[in-house]
Image 1 (cartoon, rainbow, N blue to C red):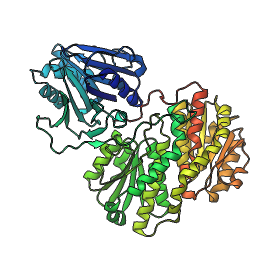
Image 2: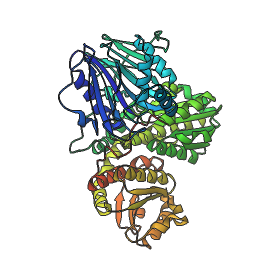
Image 3: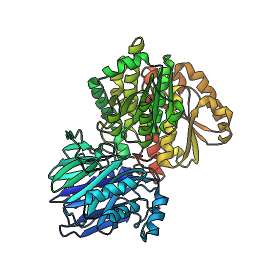
Image 4: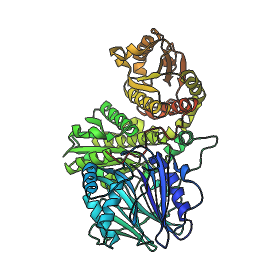
Length: 587
């Protein structure tokens, strides 16, 4: 897995590739590399273990090139395993996984091929070199036909110094044009600021950049008709004032991002959803990581209103058995998450109505869905999701309100959605207290996040953030489950964050706090209610008040800030957590 980019530019090709890789780095930062091809057919290659900064330096010469930022699957991070990979007249970058790696490696080794790296990606460039008989496109197409698994590839050939041949199956690929350059890239946001117009490649399509033109083709070389380039929406935002990391900046952008989502929802067309909403026997939801937590909150909200609903991680979506009469809501920030796409395709094939919630309008998920809601939260660079979670919740609240209106009557809390940006800004008032909490907890070896009802989902999201970027073992769980096993770990000084945004559950939360305190644990209370904050605790964090069904979008705001402060205090980079990538395009 990782990110790829290709560029054709008469001037500044290396600089353009390097800039795009910087914007792609959240997809992988184990190693990076660039290859440029001169007009004389000579390759210039620079690749290194580490982030994109490792390949900075004097620009390489050439007007056509490819680049890669890696998240390791096959082979440890190293200079040798870094892309691009070369064989004979070819250089290649690859995003995806070759599932028949072992069989192909054995076949090619038996034929006398020798490999420099441990990667599955190197096999592809060897397949291309062996298939080549003068027709560049045909060689790439033949190699791709041998691959089982997923790929987005960009390939250079020394015999064709003005050409890049690219292909995709199961991994995203988009073409772009602007500023005197042509591009192919794994990610639409990575082209913001470089390309003015973009056009995604569909599953199984090939993209060829040749002598200043972009073409889309089928595997047999026939052109794909009707491809339309659209103007790029948005651009990367500068850091918020005072922010030193992308994560801090993106937390600060939550109110503005919510305002962008509200504007998007005013334009949303859900007319195709009315009949499926009214007739739905079940409403199902899937997502991965933070998006899964948003989906859980959505289903909890519907269940409280009496709508049959069920949520699963996208990787376990087979258990839902989605089919005719079901509405499946698929949530993905990038719209390219492999597990979520697989669940969405399977559900649609069995007759379910598919609705997407994503931040990227031209994404694979948006194209697959019968209806979509777009976050328009702006680019999110830090690997750990922050503002996109709040915006996913807002989209899902809106969707729940429309679904309830289609089935009976709109909920009273719908009128409060417009107030969420201002309320989110008020949630920042808690940050000084949360920073003090982080200073007190920075040496913890583990911690719990507790909540009841909808707060149990917020607790899971808070624990995920601490695991992701502070590298502290954290578990989010329903507060009532504490006494059924987890309480065994609570000892003197053990940190427990307790979220309580339901007035009806304050007494039950007080019981959980007492169980922790009686064993020496240190409780931090998060609530909008004075009576909840009166519960004996070591720390108290006041939240802004909103209708209780909407509180998850506000109660979560201090938790990424807590995780970010913990990470920084412990000497970790919150933007680039180890072993993780933001857009997970392999199953």
